[in-house]
Image: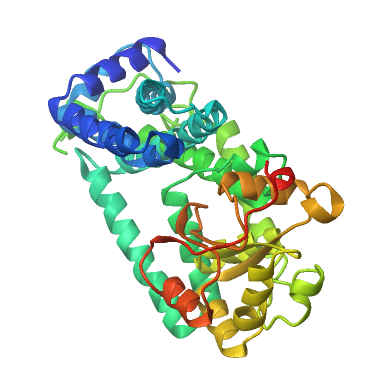
Length: 238
Length: 195
């Protein structure tokens, strides 16, 4: 990972007006229920999936379509470093917003005289970190395949297709199809709930392995796809 | 269109040379290994089994209660939400719910078709402590009274909560309906049972 690239990505993401707007919408709307029911804990914050999508959309594709990538890779940076830096920056940015959200929510609870469930906050942050890393990995792969904001379109297309497959599997009672579609759906939103482990519950190995498999596979494939892209000015018609 | 300029020797694919385009072989190997492990674990998931006997409450149930592990696996595989039944032997409304709802074959069939049922039996009063997974689930879903039915999606998020028991039809109606939380005079654990 390249720190300069990470910081540049964060700067790029946090200076985009439309992204700021979306982050404000998804990041601060949950404060309303917390203001109204401060004793309900952090549940109203939900997860950071849409925040991660807002920051991740076009993470590589926009550099491809704008021609920035050709200039960027003229520097001594490997393509793998570029992909990992983009991934790390998006995940870090998402986690940063979640930390801010949690702190503001805790402040609201304190001001309203409600006890702050710090254990719940730690669990929320840990789960958010994993979801941010997973979502950023999936978007890195999709973004390496499509230019511009095509990664969002790809995500939507895959999501709808898998849903249709799942329904067909249910209708035809094809368990293998239902199960395969379920796995694919989980891969589109890779998350790992740490709640059972916080309370000493049993380790769900399939969930752990599924999460790690999705993240490593998406990142590996994203680098492979990027390595095979020709980025000369002659081929920049994409 | 001229080919892009490259300083690599002839015949060396850019992604294989010691260039900025080297493939992450180690990462791909780990990913492949994890993928294989994922498939193996997926195939070796235990099929849903009825929970081991848990006392009088489970004696005449028409509902086939899953163990937590089997329930989670089945919920993930079938995308059906889990119906957690937080209950206790000593609680009269729980026993009424068991007799009227879970022992009824028709109600049980409907529950089985919509949900993956998992019973979470509290043994605090009888044995002085619960199994860790019971404590964990009670803490997670903030269960303070019995009976409490919680419907949780594949991701573990609570989508419906029914506290107390007001009859078979009313409970089934709430389980069929939209996600709202209800509280009907259930039995609160004694102060020593609270965590």
